[in-house]
Length: 377
Image (cartoon, rainbow, N blue to C red):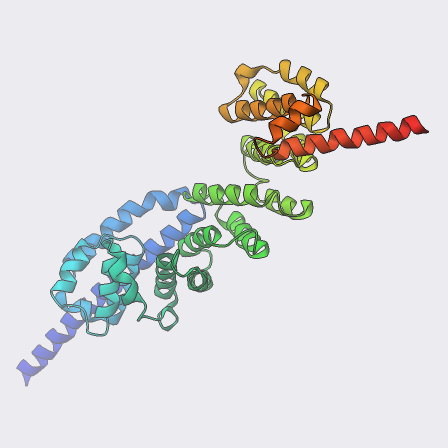
């Protein structure tokens, strides 16, 4: 009887150690997730603490009792760790030793495939696992990874999963990554409202994320893409995303839109964006770029002689390569439109008229009509 009690006590003590180790591993992974979430929101201290926390997790994995991996909480924590960027090496050894429970093996197998860079193998494995049937943290990671893997092959389903990831883990690194990926998938021209909703959320929550540069690149490209095709009011909503960015960033964005508008024969938009850029021009080079745009706009207005004088006064050495190319295109258009009608018609027969030439020609024609009406009065 005494021996039986002693055995029971030993088993109870051993069970307590296993549970403590399981709780410790789960807690360590939970703390890592919290640090990653803080990093996404711009907390420098959280970012600095992550390497040490990863080391604690690796130590816990190496020293855990073999049977502790049968615990469901440990299997889920291991999958969360892998999906959150953890090293798969130690978990792979545990998996190959068949230490995880049968219920967890499909989840761990898929997570290992992803963490080891075998995305093609991971996709069909993840398709068998419903993120909504998992705890919120693990489900958010699963939805994020699955959504990311589907980008390019099934963007509609990818967007659904990324939305789910954001719903399951708001104010987290998972949401930050889901927003960045979905912003890259949504067509800003076809679904501007959705794009702006996602982008505003990102700006409000994650503008200080170490990964924000990727978001700003996507947002800039989208704004430039839609600028020529949406109403001025809506363009203002896209531009408002950049209100808190450095002046140089906003200047470059306005100038790029303005120059695209010039090349596509949209003088009103070009003038508006040039004026916006001018308020941010605080260097000699920036002012030279603004002067270039204004000279081009003078040409689009049909006053070729004045435009030629403005071009001649430019400090060409201050212009970047793209600016010089714009100057060459507009100057060439001016030269073409200043030809005699017979020479211009002969030149046009060899190529299509450029949008910038078309706009300038229309302005010139309109001014001639107005002049004729004035003379007749």
